[in-house]
Length: 182
Image (cartoon, rainbow, N blue to C red; front, side, top):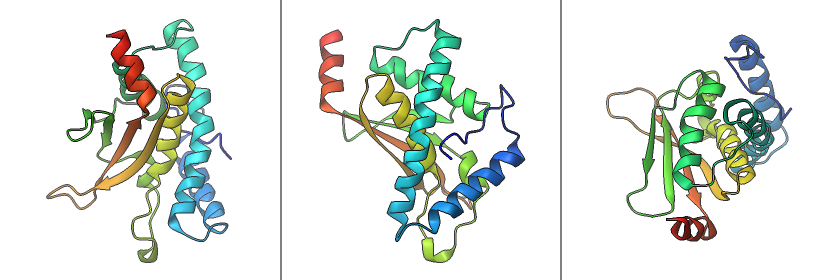
């Protein structure tokens, strides 16, 4: 089940097929957990393997088997190359956290994985973006940029649905290596 992803450029999976398979994956995992945090963790784990595979594919295809070694380079790769490959467009925004030096955010107004899931009231804050967070974590870990990656809903004034923000918090070793390279 960890191989489910939408890839518009290759037409590997139609949007309808992806929506059905992803919904089934969520329902399957929902019956095997006790709370929302466990469900999101399972989705993140499923996405992680996809991220590792997408890194290999895109580095081979787009970069001649070269990988990013700088922090801004890998963030740009995720924000543009990976996002475009998965969702057919660049992510809506990439921002550096204002409070913490080690935090970056990728925001999407309507993340594809949240579009096809209706969340029951008793599951309130459940965010299928955990799957995409897992993909991003797989790409970052595979590139040598370990980070904690989580998905969050952020309310937008005047909009009925919140946007999804993928929060990336890099480890101290990544920041130290980046400082040495600068």
